[in-house]
Image (tube, rainbow, N blue to C red; front, side, top):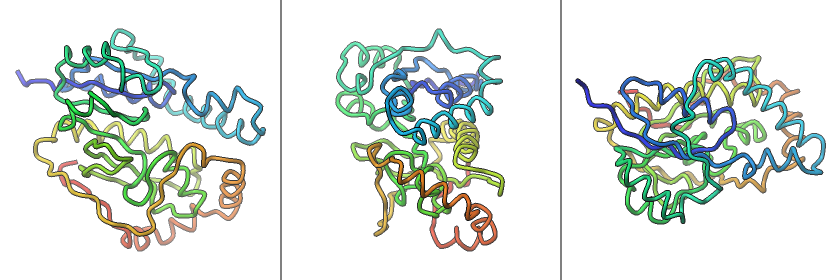
Length: 273
């Protein structure tokens, strides 16, 4: 009988994260031991929706929530993962010895982080060679937070995508295992593209896991115009620029010359994925 890959997931708890962890756990070749998830109250979307922020900011996250429900709720209604879940606070994984010991007890072949706080401390020191970070963006072009939102703001849709990388102490600086750009249409917007990316990413990470011993990680290259975004960068001005770009039909414009534009900016694609 083929040995299953034992994994631990560290993630968040919005609908897209729930879909990711549940779908991945259903893979017959993967044995999910534990999924730690940071609770909703630590999320930027929760804080903005429940604050006195401008209406446009609240509506952005409400629209994203509606889109996530459209893409993922049917699957989640039919599948459950409650017995594998441990709720944690933001950054708790980095300083809680009890959580660290739970990981030791699980003895994972691999730890996967997606959408959570930056991993530091004992966990990364012990498991650095057994950790993969899923970065929803293309490094080194876009790093940090919301890196499939900012390409819409900056009209740089060639930088939409996902990077699977080895985890290190930096912000999205690890060696790259595989990258891809999403399949999109002229009818897509920032939310639908984000969810399509997650659907594709969840299928591809399973292939990365199962072929991990055959993939040679590659160093990131220097890109002089790389952008690093923080949550604090998200504001009403960015949303206004996004709205303006969508009226200019930037998705359609990009798709006309997609192949030639993409070729100017390399990505690392493993032939095994």
